[in-house]
Image 1 (spheres, rainbow, N blue to C red):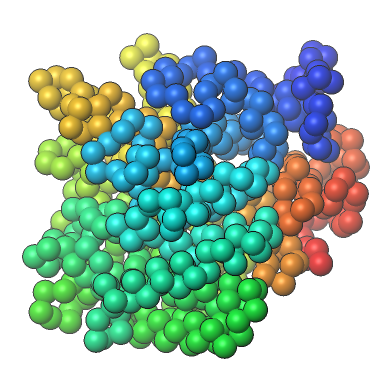
Image 2 (cartoon, rainbow, N blue to C red; image 1 turned 60 degrees about the vertical axis):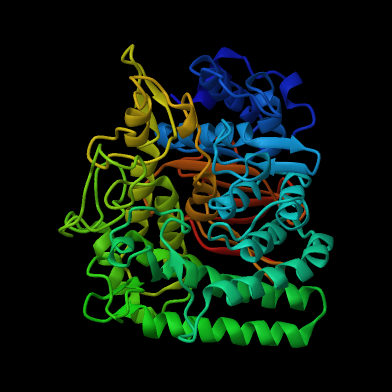
Length: 530
């Protein structure tokens, strides 16, 4: 029985908890309460920031979409990731920022901020109804003391994708001059005479990578940084158009087109049928290994149709497929390692939620924008379930609780860095490594965005329309719902009820805007709301 049915049966849906809400599914706040109460009971709240556990339920009910499906593990992880994201919202003299680690770590910048995963913070947090937190965070990177180029960070793309939901034109007008300077800074610092951008694997947030070891200092022309810079140029073209500068829009689009051509021509290994790193070691050879970062170009929809052959490796057990998430390098690679020695954060085999969430975003883009079916909707849902199930830890009392940390053993689900760090210095946590439970509730990836824009298919467009294209395969589930999605000033709800017995709205697939049904059909279909 679902939580929804249980609450109805027990009669515990409180009218009080629904005040100020706009949920079509009226017991949604009670479901959120139940999940949050469970997470709070199982939590050791070591590091409180702006919204402590005792205020978590009220914040989430006010700000997040309600999600329900028959896979209760997936549903639970969705609410868990919102519960952990809330922990990282931090109020500062410069306004709100989003942190990556909860404890202060020596390598962080002002207010314990790190730009490495900031694009995930925006892609995830843009679905909050709150319209103050992320604008503050965006301004922080350019006027509040942040360092947006310390790590690879596609700031313009992230902020533009926030705009697609919240339509904050004033934010774009304010930040456009700074975003232009930031892009010019990347060009000056990391683009050379080849036209390609280079990055050190560590500054890509991917230290100890196989390709990084092929040059003395880890430098390489990487699919990541080059894709990010394509995304930056394309986003700046859109932003320039929005703020009324058509000539600069054309100039940035030309830059984007050149970067796209360069990526598809120079970083595509025809023999391996994969995007690869070219190490900067005085040669022009590709790295011998396929790495998961080869899927990053699909995050920005820039590969041509014929390159979809690369996706075969994601489902190959000698490629990236593993029980607890895709490996960061193909398992057939001679330098593939799952090591409990040396650096605690290695990108030469372990599964990393950061890279998994980039890859699954790319899969969703592939399913929406490419004609071939190398990867299917069923594959997406199953990969998403694997990612969801990796969000667990077995406690010393043999209880299984929700957990997100740094890097995973892809075969056992063990959180490698945690296992190592808890006895790093004389059998205890080491302050120089970030202290007690450094990686607990690690905000270095996305998950809720994969549910909302991927699985449920809410995809706002630059022309003001909203595409709704759920990736749930035909016949896979009997029901699902995403309710009260704030998008472009409206509340959007997507419901599928095969038998018409779950939500009381009748059989079939329905799309509501501001609680008014605008679309109804028997089967799940792609819908465009204009």
